[in-house]
Structures are given as structure tokens and as C-alpha cells.
Image (cartoon, rainbow, N blue to C red):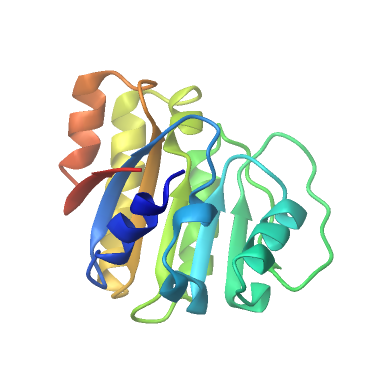
Length: 175
């Protein structure tokens, strides 16, 4: 993703909730501003914690300041400095909400919460359930005083569903 994407997210005020459209298969870790890595919770639907650790290190950040909620149907094994929650199946929105609530306790005011990528959940849940989940997550993140970035893959969601998600965020950016 281009450097201008990092500048776009760098301009986001602390506590703002952002819906970010990104090219499919991109990594939002590559475009997060440096300050996001001071206290970051990453809800991740692709990649492994080990790959995330490498990406965080490549950015020059400390992986011990990053928590990951793996959302995958596969078993997750990881032993490293990232804090990693129990794996959640992409079809288990209730389990995801519980893991998110537990993990959000570790996000300080001014921290960052990044959901990479909502489009995966769109394959497992209808648009109304996904909207309710994102609304709940965005409100909890806002209440915690953290910046939230909710990534959707460009062109994957129906325009009306994308608009619905925009209604629960403060800004919309294209990465």
C-alpha cells in the first residue's frame, strides 16, 4: 500500500473511528502510523501471529505492545512477544465479541484497535449481524478513548452494506 495511506491514517485524531477501504490481500500493519504501535489491538482474519510479529518488527516497533485476536478456522500456535487471545472462528460473532471485550481492557486511552478485515466476516454473517457487531465494537472502542480502524476490502461488499458500516464510524478513508 502506498505511503500516502500511512499519511492518511496518521492524520486521524485520537479516538476517531475509521472505516478504511483497502485493496484485497493488503496488510494494514504496513500503513499504520508509528504511534499506533505504542498500544495496538489487532483483530486479524488473515495471516498468523508469527507473520504479524515479523511485520511489526519490520516497522521498527515492539511486538510486546501488540495484541492479536486471530479470527480463523485453523488452529493457531504461537510462542512469542505478541499477546494472542484464543482463536475465534469467523462464523462465531458472539465469541469474537467476548474475546474483543476481554482484549479491549488492555487498550489504553489513545491506543489503537484495528480490525483487519471485515470482508472475511461478510462471507460468514449477513450484513445486519455484521453491522451490529461493528457498531458494538466501534462504540466500545470510542468509549475506551481509542482510535478504531475497520478495514474492508475494496469491491467486496455491496455499496449499501458499506454505507451502513460508514454510518457507525466517524471517517471513511481509502488506503
